[in-house]
Image 1 (cartoon, rainbow, N blue to C red):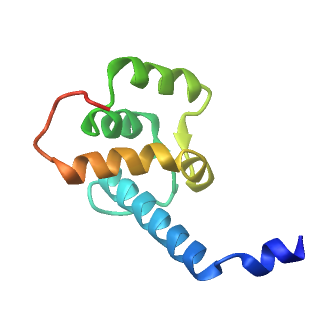
Image 2 (spheres, rainbow, N blue to C red):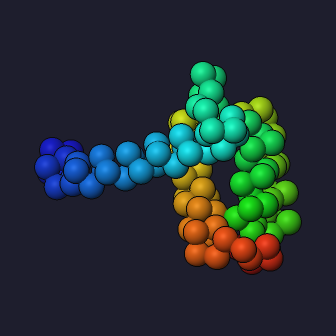
Length: 104
């Protein structure tokens, strides 16, 4: 275990977590109309908006709904658990913001 810890790049991990937190805060601001909410959770409605904006196919959107149906909102830990999905959506929107096709 010590050898694994000594080989870890904590600066890189710290930067990745910082960027993930910034993306989470950006989604919170989008939900609150520019101001970060005190609740600190992304609503299910905001999640669906992000899925549509990211061009997720309908069948994948439905799979995400089924997976997250027990959650009314996502906090930072939920967000980190599903971070690859949010990074995929973010990169899709950044790469082509005017594309409204479902291609992911």
